[in-house]
Length: 75
Image (cartoon, rainbow, N blue to C red):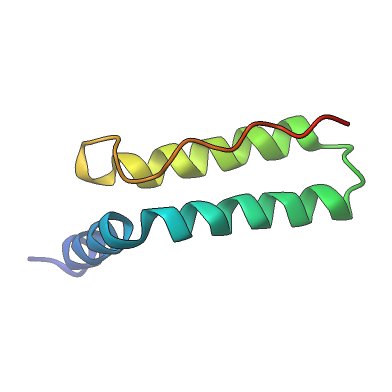
């Protein structure tokens, strides 16, 4: 088993065990960046956080580890 295979296995286990906390971190980082940019790039930030969630969720071939994003707040 190569180094990358071992790393993927460990990451998959972490996502399985702590998917909700990882999702919170992704959302928190996206919100922080959005606040820093004054909302000018909100669409790109939302797209990036969505792709990050999808990529982590699909590590084990199942889309069951990362909960769906919270609804967007009204301006």
